[in-house]
Length: 111
Image (cartoon, rainbow, N blue to C red; front, top):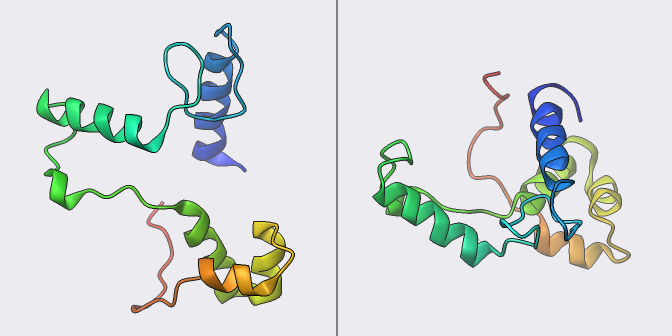
């Protein structure tokens, strides 16, 4: 990792070292424990109600599995075997379950 993403992850890891419970999870609660998807959704909804979520209506925001996106991007660039290796699957059939078939044009990030 590099750039802005690396800086954000470094800040999160530094913050997490301050907790008594050390978790391998990147996103943790105030006690240093793994924050579940449901807990993250609850907190995001609470922030939205408090006016802190950039005015995004709940129906317009979805939490998605970035692992599937990473596998899809890798498969499109380098093939199914490379995607399987990246995702750590022993069986290509499992990788095929993760890879999505894009309905639109692949574009580059804006930044």
